[in-house]
Image 1 (cartoon, rainbow, N blue to C red):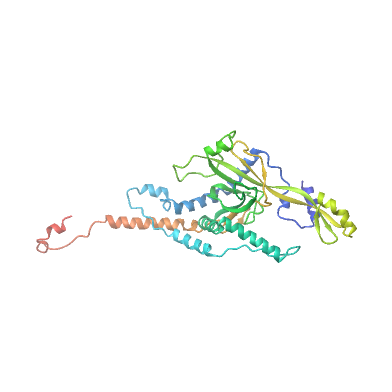
Image 2: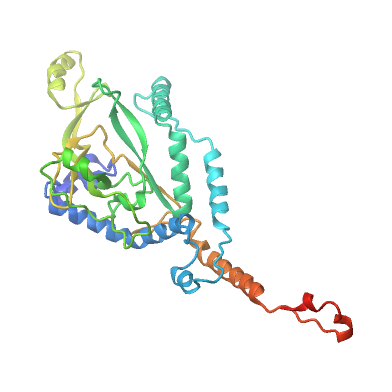
Length: 380
């Protein structure tokens, strides 16, 4: 395998894309292998996900800003929350939400022109407008500020129920801390070098039985160590496995500078080009990439694989304080560093209030003559 890879690298003369190093892996047909990949992805990020979940619960849960032990131990005593963290998150998130985010396409070499770049600009703006992307970007920014991680994705959808036309749409991934898991070996901040990604979907039992009547009904694990909320809907957690498939293709550079892929269309015009004096200059083998999608539960595949229109994993992570350390993706949000100071403040001020309220009243010193006629006012 290594010799084959070296040979391909030499043919490409160092013009690798990031996926050329990812082209030599087995097909993902084995269900057990894919479940093991999900488990490995979860284990690689478990510690940071638990910190991120704690940050969200710290802000959102009613008793989140108290350690559970102290909350239970002080039952019957004042337990007040003097929230200083939500305003900080709101301030940082609001600054991001008010920023004017925009995607601009600039021509850069080859056949690129300003007109083509302008067309792509318009297409991207249309996708963002249809998707209400401003709200999605804002929600993801708030999640990232809170815990250091959030995510959104690009999907292909039919225009309406009576059409075969499809549009690209931007969608927010709900609760990405429990549902989105990337290839742990990917190191780019946008994870565009991921070989695969898992998106978990909790669906109702009725919908599961309707769509996959032969399915096992066994849920996948979301890698959460405990549950903070109860009285929730009964769901079955299935997985969407997005992975990159690579196929070899042969490219030919012609004497007029044009590049063609060797296929039936090229073979049909190669003689005509030769008559015009356009001949082959060089030829090399490259990889083409296509993202495939497949649904599965804990026991088996639920559907056959489907090819998408994407050549990169269409799930976009949003990281705060991103870095790679010891071959591990590190991230955190603003709340993580505020946990201890906020808890100390809540405990100290609650204790101060309790001691002030329960302290004995100050004693009055006076003679019996001074108290004469006011005895009832000074009785406890």
